[in-house]
Image 1 (tube, rainbow, N blue to C red):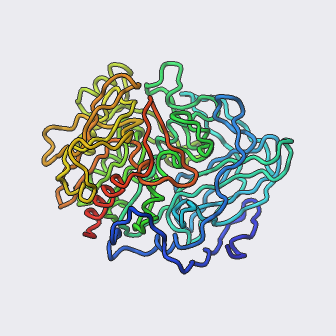
Image 2 (cartoon, rainbow, N blue to C red):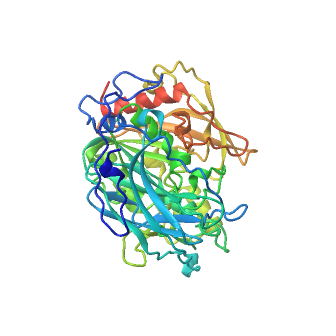
Image 3 (cartoon, helix red, strand yellow):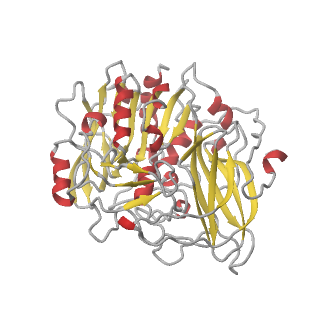
Length: 515
């Protein structure tokens, strides 16, 4: 990092910093390489970015919850004023320390970087921290912080699109126990044409976020599935409350646990990828400039405008990869935050599913809801089934399909533990050209059998839509620093698997036209 990037910057000062000098070496790749994975016309931006030196220290080292079983770490915590931001735009970073003490903020871009997983972009501070107010529960159980910013960061023009982590670290010993750490997370987006647009599932991160004390769309006294609770992006992300207790999830949402392995793997192989948040897909404009749209990880909560945008890009010829499970399950309308910023509050407005029995069942059990979305099966290729929580093996059904080329898989061959924590099933029988490429049984709750289905169907312009039917697809692509394998209901993925890697290469190469 050069001297300009290392400078410390005081509160509310706009920032510009130069990128580090590119290293001469090309990006390293592992044994799952497929020749020429990126298209010949692709931008070299991601390859050049990942040739730069990665950080040797970017993870959280000293973290703690305030109490056993809690999700909050009040020694230092924060959030950002926007889900995503372009280069040249500004974002506020809000921080609270308890007790008041000095802290610094280090900004890292997550990626491959020779296997290190992130690059240090700038250090900010030190700042004098103070304890900021925890809001009481408002109408519809809303917790909406109104903290003062520690700093306003103007994104330098040479910061590429990606998922950025701001590591918060106390520098004084006011607590008497040494330093403490936490993250904030934000996305840098761009408008350039790219091969791949990777959508982060940050609506779902926020829906499950229980900061500060069991406050999410699932924790209302009326029950855990109704339309009663609002959640705000104006609050820190607490420790992720399900599947495992990964300390790296303090402040980082579900990025490091469910989504980072895919971004890491794409950048490892030089794919031309750019990133966006759920809120960036309210129109089709961004994705229409790309060849592939990817839904990643746990992508449960979609504003109806997202659904309409993805329909439009599919019909315009963009390929869709749902490398995700439980996707497009709940209509989640946005509204403005307390100061008029767009897309800062959401809630569970109602089920997707049209007139399908699963949507009707959800309404019978948990409704009435104010919204109803279309049948997601005609977009994804399969539906959210009920019940859906569990795990199982991913079993090949059509080994002759081109997506299995080079995997050596035969009908009935299984990839252990790949299906879970949630999945899709019940594909529409009248969707033209739909093929079931993998199928099997997951054990809901570890005991009750439920059928899942992975599918592919053709789009109208020689494109296609693939549904992997599992939140855990990217768990078998890579095992980057800062990531832990999840487990649920006595089932777990095993980590990098050359068959999953080859299937994903085959899908992407076909989608971007490099074969």
